Image (tube, rainbow over all chains, first blue to last red; front, side, top):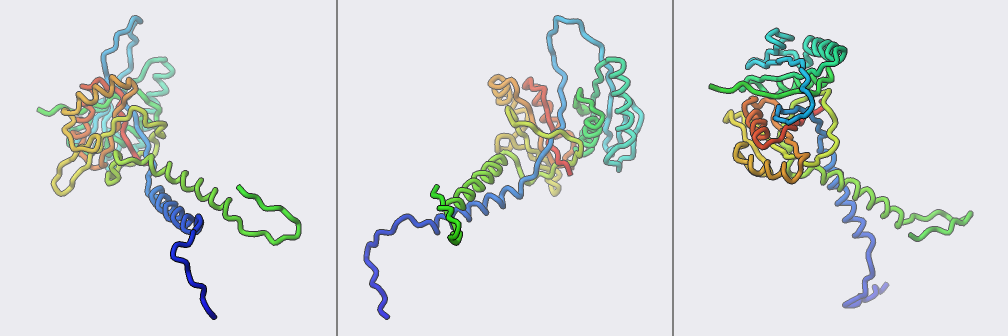
Length: 147
Length: 141
């Protein structure tokens, strides 16, 4: 059987098959890229600042949380939980009670978090997480100043 | 798009046009997801875990600091706007951002093992720039 002889410049119309191939490749690329994305969350803090006010200043209930170099956590100089504990149940319970009592007294609860400069960052995040569980939003983040 | 006749007896044929429609919608969907993870987020950083952190609503006015902890050299590398910086040196740039957008806030993305002194340097720079909103990026698990 004779094969038809191809023309030198055949008028090729729009080819759908290669377009679908390319679109599929791009789709797979973006799907693979999207699968690697980790969804991040945030813990918020508010730094102290100067603000002029015409209204009278309300007195706040301030608590001091400290993180030592070895990861030990203390609230108003009283140690809570072991340095290995990540979910900090004792501290969380105490913060929940503090929040309840300050809400009952209609006073503003402010927590100042002081971290040792050599303490690991994740330990500060553990404390911020416990504060988030307790619903305490007025958190000030500070660090020990070095000599 | 061209539609089939919808005859009762005819064998249903494979329609290429609706398939391309669906394919393009999927493509746009995955492109929009992928483009949210822009290069200012350093993917090599291992964020600390905080199961009860808040969901991030938007990225408006976000000034992202990536702090990578190098275990071998025991040093941290702080990057801001895709360049290695000393946090104190970028205070003027942060002040300009704050003037342009009063909602500007600092987002700290740091390795979990980084000593707090490097995070404090970024927080101090934010304070010097007059930015009081400082947020810390975490993972849920």
